[in-house]
Image (cartoon, rainbow over all chains, first blue to last red; front, side):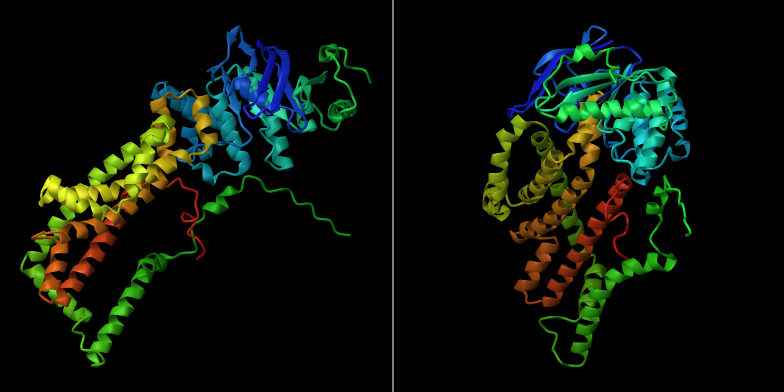
Length: 261
Length: 283
């Protein structure tokens, strides 16, 4: 279980990015974190990844405190961040350097086939389209088989069509080993398509505002009325989170009992 | 009303990698294009002297320069001077590159080291390298050592600056990829920083090599008995402009050739670059 307890982050310049954020995320759960800009969602993700340390509070994965990048936690950034001097295959195998060469090759080949880029193994990253590059990044993060995969607005730079395609693809890949997914997004559609639970955050300082369980079976039909009502619910919560006149409410009260409409 | 629905075409990156509109002819025409300017200038000067518009005594025509070069080559003297100069440049360049790379990498990677040594290096860099000549002669004698030291000093500064600057400007986002995969310090340098700075490093090496050629002449001006720089001084003292121009032409050829060699030798490591030049630029 991924346990976030009372995470706060104050940057050296005095910006209060995150305040007492707590959440327990079950193995295999998909959680989407959504909120207006400056609500600390990227800060939160970087703290879970071990890239930055929270000013107070703790991140624990199965009771191991996370203070630095951990082999069981992978991350996919907004940009593919492929290493331009490595071929696509070597990029995917970047995290496997301690494996013997033949196991490594085999894993890379399997991952390439799984993301549908087997013919691009020897291509340079510059020869890929945006969608292809992000698929390579997904393969690179998944090939060491992390227990937790963090995604920081992973599809926001892609066109709507590619984005939808990659969301479905991501769910398909997730079903293979069912890692925990923590997804930061500002796209309501994306949150409702992917997540079991949507955490709405409120900016300045970033804190948890509301928690919405998405009780929809997969695969989810983006055009169904139920999907629409979940979307509406998240949108309303998002609007309220940005409205300063609405007081904070105890976010925990929303768990399970959030079907108020 | 007609309505066309076009499905978005995805994953069509291959177009960007298509070669420039070039045939076999273009492959040969491109280097020839670079020769166009010097050759036409030489021809024009030759023509002017041939028509008697100038005596060509102080600025000898290309045929005379060529004749001098052939004479020097035939007597074996050219080979001797070229070998001596090339050896000096190679030794000085090698030492300068090693020193510049080492210190550049150290001050690029460790902030503390940068604060400690960079101000001193920058102050030393501000000294015109020729100013070291008297001191080097006193310290190291008038023979090879002082010459090579001068060249090495000249080469090391641009390499130092290039390496340090390149490491400092490596994209934080790419370094984070290394951090996520928990690379140790040496692994981070070897797998992320070095490949990332390679393009800038090659440029620094080329600048360093150019300075190496500059300083070899300075070094050979200060009392050498052989080398291309000696040919220059000898030509000046004995009033032989043809010999001076011949030495200059050989400098140009050697400088261009070594620069080209450096480029060719490093090209295989830079094939991944996604830059203006890889696409060939306009036309």
